[in-house]
Image (cartoon, rainbow, N blue to C red; front, side, top):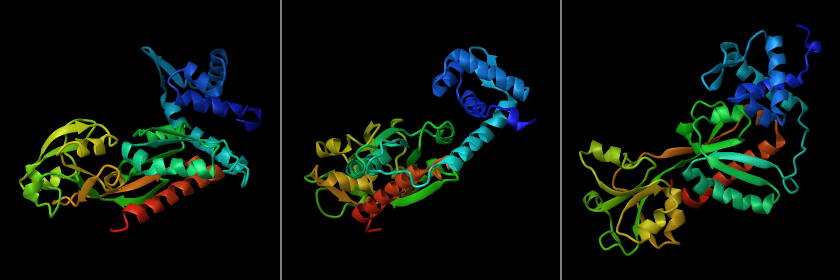
Length: 309
């Protein structure tokens, strides 16, 4: 096949058609009408000698040939973007670039809140969109839907462009005037004599201290669960409940809500915080800058709330 006879704009159309579950979705992504996207699909079918998308029930599904082409087309477009990317063309002071970041509850609260505050000072025109973490983040990268993913290292494991930022430990917290745990060393028996609260979006599932407790033949009583960390300090400050949460969250809430922190009387396994980015961003000056901002934020956190480890 003579590549000179091809319209290389079809690559972009092919990428969209392979990423979207419908021709109308691909048309929206490309900024085209649906008839124009359908015409592009017809041309691609002719050039490649394959239907690419076939109807199955009410949905369009990719053929085996389309599945094979999907990562290759994405990689080709990334390479083209890197080839023609302007050098040193990013100025954070004047930029109005939009960055879309996938993040879990912890990362949003601990990492991205201070990052957003810093960006307001250093790059006031930048728009930051924080979206719920998605374990299909690599697909979202390939579809050019998001720019970064931040979370625990296990959730990002296996991705080629991933960096560990720091190791997070756990602390338990109670209100400062707790009638039994307000002062002094907290023993395991005293810890287990209290009722506990747990952050879990699936209800009463094992938390970080339950596995080491089970190894000792012990257990705690969890009487309250909620799906995110934001309500944790208010709950603890107004009740006698005990919570065990990541250290950065615990230290951030202790002073403002009059809470007492202590090391849980069992070994709660720490976890690594990490972030990942798509291959296409390696040569993008704006993404290089944003990755440095994430790294700088992590360094501040290490100094502020993790320096004892």
